[in-house]
Amino acid sequence: VVVTAVAFFDFPEEEGCLIVDMNMPSLNGIELAKQLHEASSHLKIFVMSGFLPENTIQSSLKYVDEFLKKPLHIDYLLK
Image (tube, helix red, strand yellow):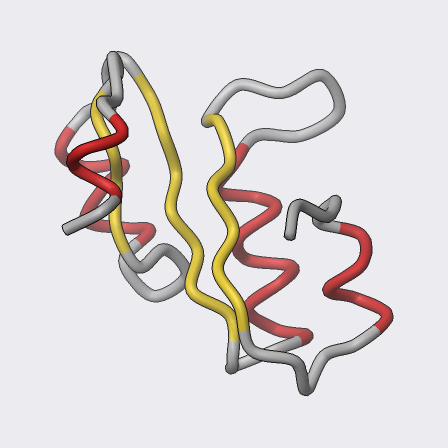
């Protein structure tokens, strides 16, 4: 089932996973991950990007479960 990230704010006890892009129109993936992490500890958050500096990755591990490198192949997600 595909839902928007906003739905997780309405149901913070729900488990699930969310894949977001690092670059989005209103905020970046790490900022969204931080907000969602504070609202729900049951959510796995994956951030996709073509390039992320190592210091950005290290400083965001509290909020992001995994960083995914673009291009992302569906086989990787199925593992």
